[in-house]
Each structure stands twice: as structure tokens, then as C-alpha cells.
Amino acid sequence: MKVGVDRRDATAASADAIAVGLFESEGKEDHLPAGLARVDKATGGQLAAAWKRKELRGKRKEVTVFHTTNTRSRVLVVGLGARGSFSAETVRRAAAEVVRALKGKGARTLAVHLGSFVDGPVTAGGAARAITDGAVLGGYEFLRYRTSTEGTVEEVAVHLGDDHAPEERGLAGEVAEQATVAECVVWTRDIANLPADTATPERLAEEARALGKEVGVKVTVFDEKQLQKMGCGGILAVGGGSVHPPRMIVLEYAGGTRRGRTVAVVGKGITFDSGGISIKPAAQMSAMKFDKSGAVAVLGIVRAAALLKLAPRVVGVMCCAENLPSGSAYRPGDVVRTYSKKTIEVLNTDAEGRVVLSDGLAYAVDQYRPDEVIDLATLTGAQVIALGDAMGGLMCPDDRLAAGLLNASAATGEPVWRMPITDYHRDLVKSEVGDVRNSTEITVAGMLTAAAFLENFVGTTPWAHLDIAGPAHGIATTRKYQPAYQNPGATGFGVRLVTRYLQDLGRT
Image (cartoon, rainbow, N blue to C red; front, side, top):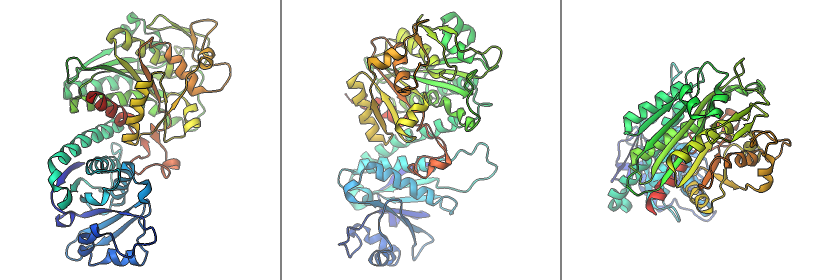
């Protein structure tokens, strides 16, 4: 989707549709807000009449369509809810609701009335970014396996009007930057949505190599023989049951400054998770193609960092394997020696994500000496039980790093909640056979014990673990509770959040 800015008022455009935001009536207003006078005139007074009759309420998720009098265009009025709860997230969701409402309705171009989305804490720049985010993400469809599809909006113009035309240069830059980030998210979604017969570890390596050529980042792919020499027993054990051998993929973006911070971003890339010998129930196992979402998010983050020329140096590490049962699969009771030389007692082969990450985290710390490490992983069902499918879990012993990620979360609308790691959780993952065990004797605090396990492989480096098991993908039954810019299938969760963190880091 192409997104840009236009100095003119939205009514001056020849777009197929015009979008305006409307706050919910507080019961006192008899007249339509003055800022919508031109739009109302274009509809021959239909908006004002509907407002007066209380047919137009401005409630959240309310999208009402009016036709203009002198063109084939139409006006979509999207409810913003109460002013007191208005935020950039409101705008992001509203933009997506408009784009989704136009799907299959013959609208290729959309003009957005910027001024109607600016109020209180939401500046023109914040609104322009949120409109861009919502429109691009809300218009996303995974079309690779479709033989036909309904048309959707292809071009969006954020119309500044008289109030914001003087800010054109700055707003154009903000829209362009956010459009780049949003397009990186939909690019990520396309890869994460690929089924396991296509998105093998080798295929993810090919995607990384193609990205390296596109944006000029160094890419190194370690195959099973190299992983053996390196001592990466974790990745090798998990991938041992599949005919598609594991890969560890490293991407290096040099950064925009010579002395900038180095951030390692490590992702779990289980291209399909059957559970291995500890096999999962059949119900919903098809969703296990999304178990690669953390590693694919790393691809999206590195791509965004390179395209935006962000200041920090970014090292992406993708730990990729397919977890299947076979005669060569690892077993409960096995002891695995990892890159760090620490050993893992395997009690459950379905707790495989932490096993592959043990190699990736230790490798990143040992080889690159990063200032901080962030890992993303669809790691535990316990995360979904604790926080639901819209919010990720953040486990981070370092307060500065945690604060930065929480600020980025608030800015992007990708919600995470900080959770603790205590000595209780650390004790639960100690092994009597090896150094740590990948499952515990008692089934409590699964998200936190998984984080306590990973902590063993980062040493003293500041580190944050993002468990994104819930928000990494959506299903039809929960879709109605999610923002309109999310969709069934892969969401690309974490790309906007970590990219924003890297942007903020470059400003400090």
C-alpha cells in the first residue's frame, strides 16, 4: 500500500473515499463539529442531519458511509469514542477499521482528513503515523494461496488542510518513516504465514540471504555440520528428527554511527512444532507453523533498521529447526551440551524453544559482545494463560532496558507486561543431572521458569525476553476482540516494538 501526504483539504481530492474521525457525543452538542463543515457540505448536509437525529454517535468501531453529491466518492465517518480516552492507538485502530470497511467495495484510493484525528495528546505527527500504521496493517491480506481476492485500498493520502499544511515537510517525513516500518511488518507476516512444507529452516536462510542483498547487511548461515563443530547441541538436538536440517542464521547491520550501541536480537525459529517425542494433541496443531514467528520478527527488525538507517548496530540471530518425532529425534532424558558448554537435561521435547535459544543467545553474547540482548519467542502456552492472546510477556532483570521496551510498547500499540524472574523460578530449572532442565517438576509459572532457563545463557549482559506466544498470531474465534489492524494468521508482533526501541535508542 502506498501512503503519502497532500496539502489540500480531503474534500478537494478525487479519491474514491474520504475518511473522517468523529468523537462520541457527550449529550450536549446539537451541531456537528466545525472541523467537519467542508465534509458535511460535500455530502449535502447528510452528516449534520444524521448527527442531529443521533444516527451518528461517534462510538468506537462505528463506521458510517455517506455519499457525496457531486462525485462518485463516499465519506466514511469512523467513531473515535470519548475524548477522555483518545490516544494514538485509537487513531491506529480507526484507520484500520476504515480500510477494512472498504474491502471489496471498489475503493482503490482513500483520502484521510488529518485534522479530525488530532486532539489532546495526539499531535498531527502522532496522528499521521498512527493513520499510516493502521491503514497499511489493516489492509494486509495473505494472498499466496488464493486464486481470487476482493479488491482493497491501494493508495492512502493523509490530507493536511489549512490547519496542518505548514507542517507538510515534517509530516511527510513521519509518514514515510512509519510506512517503511509498517511495510516491514506486512513483509514479516508474509513469511511467518508460510506453511511448514515451504518455510523450512533452509527456506528461512534463503529469505535472510535475499534480505542481505536487498538492504546490504551481512548474512552468515551455519548448516548442521558447522553447528556440530561449533558445539551447538541445542539446535542440533531439536532439529535431529526432521529431514530438514537446522540452521542458525546471523544477520549483521553495521549501524548508522561508528560508536553506537550494539543490540543483539535473537529469535526462536521452530518452523513446525509437533512437540517431538512429547507430541502435542492434534487439535490446533496446524497453528504450530507460527512457532517460527520470533525468528521471522528478527528478519523484519533487521530489515527496518537497515532501511531506516538506524544508529544502533543490530545483530540478528535466528535459531531455526523443525521439531518432529522420528528415529533420530531427541528424547526425554537426553542431556544436551550447548554452545556455552552448559548442559541441558531434556525432560520434555515440547519445551524445545528454550533449547534452540540457548545456543543463539550464548553465541550472540560470545561473538559480538553486545551492549544488550533482546530475544523474541513463541515460547510458552503459560504466557497465553497469564496474559491472553493480545499482550506479550516481558521478562527483563535490567530496569533501563525494560523501561525502554515498555515505552516503545506504549508508542506502538504492541502491548507487553513486565513479569518477574526470582530465585524461586531459577531454582525450579536447576537440574540434578546437568546444569539446567528444560521442564520443571511442578507445572507452575511456566512463562517465568522458561525465562529463568534462558537467563543462564546470557551471562551478565543486559537482556530482555519477550514471550509472544499469544500475540504472534490470531485465530478466527478471537479475531473480533483484536484491533482491526491485526488479522487471522501471523501478526508480525514485535517488529514495530523493537524497531521503535532501536529508534529511541539512537536518539539518546
